[in-house]
Image (cartoon, rainbow, N blue to C red; front, side, top):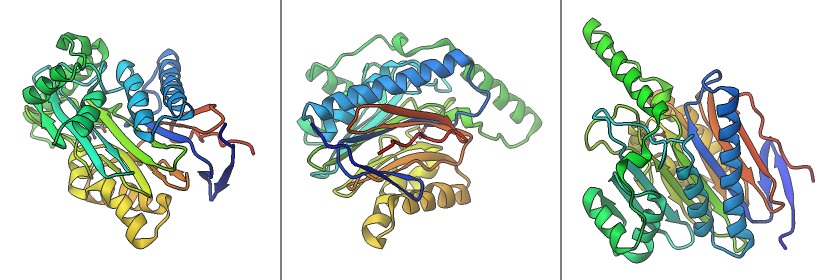
Length: 335
Ligand code: ASP
């Protein structure tokens, strides 16, 4: 049994005893976006994902095991922009990107431009564990998935009506902006629902993973930050990050690595480092979004600058805690 031992410092959850698992289901969800039923379904999926990762951790699994198990559940849930439920490209297809990193040894795996891999995070993990490479794309990545016995599906599996309608709306808005020669303002919903997980296992090892369909209406071959190690995902011995937001800005900022670099080199707390990159640097450059960050002491931070970010955590006691909108406080454990 793991000892339950938490503190809340400056409003930040601090779990002094592992295991701890922290997740996001994407920034860009604004109040009023979801019906009551949709909100309930999203909350239930976040809780199920947290429980799946927690089960790995309490069974002695590694932080990497927990991240992969958690993200698999979120990829299967149609509420999120990853796996089934991914957003559509400009050409009307689903194109998936993912990455995973093991903070204990610096290993990483990533894949981009996938059309048929049911659970992209499992391919990222196989690339990390079973190939000599860090990143594979498109057909080659899917060939490797086949060799590894990873489940491939008909691309129609990823399609949901809600995402299809989001694309139609984005196309109509784009056409309107072009016709009137006004600059197109990208709606927050363009990146609604990327998923990410960070885990701290009983041995104090951190891991991070991210999975996404990218941004609605993205052009052929566009790759965002989610599969880029250092941009959308990072884990080292003392810090792990998964981002969600306007990927081009996260790549330019090397956002996930930048947060952990500030922790390592400047001695910043995880929340100060996360605030600086996500809520200062990225908006200053013109981008937006959020991230989750976790350090090896079990301090978690959830910075975001949109109207909401699906987010949650689960500690040693196995009780999942989730929140969606900006005003929703994440309930802190009593201790
Ligand atoms: N960051 C992702 C991308 O740009 C989108 C997201 O976070 O939802 O591909």
